Length: 306
Image (cartoon, rainbow, N blue to C red; front, side):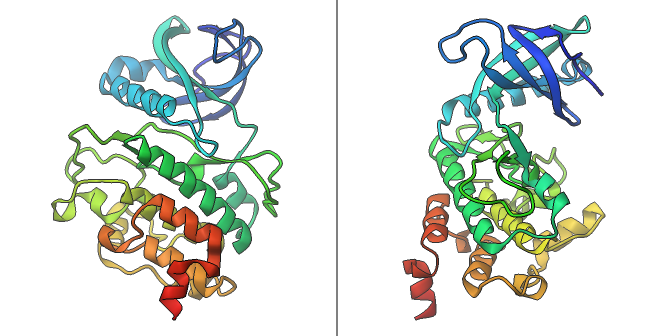
């Protein structure tokens, strides 16, 4: 469903082209028509515009959008898409809401995976390190992303899908289901699940009474790296009950079984990220960034193999 017509003006932005669409709205490349301190006239932005009927029918959506805006403005990091401003507007005569964000001239990792069977390990390590760095900044700002997946990681246009040559820009996007840690917000299977089921950690299903914290993003990073390196997810089941059962009870198949080309180091990193018990995963995203940057020379790997 298209939300805005190309060439029209929303707020102080002119719509140039559609970048993508989903259940909540559309994202457009747009140009700023006025000067502001952070967004000079002529600056290209990614403008996320909510479907007007959702604004009318789902009042709780406004809270999610405000949270997305708050997190996106709070985090200033080279591996995180920055949010500039949010504003109420009208589209086709109906009230809606839009968020202006940093424009990244590139593609999502999902687009990369559609073009290639798998990504070489060296590039997986580099992308993983940069995503971990962005997650560390998000967590340091007191938030949890909760929806880390290939669709929400952007790589620069210079990153050819077949090779992902470095260096490239890697940015985490879409804070639509992010959680600010000060909020009281527990997810249960019977409640309203928040995030993407395919990339959810076991504790996101409310089992064991655990609160959802930054370690769900580490689990999702493990799933992302597993898929990049192997071309498949560890639990590629189609039905929701089956996926939940696998996430809660099945140990992911060893990545070396489906991607025998990866190193023992990389396989170990992925499987620590995918531990069912969050206490058994890495301590935090900054630790993951350091380990992926140092590789086999990291203290973690040397201690593990000594």
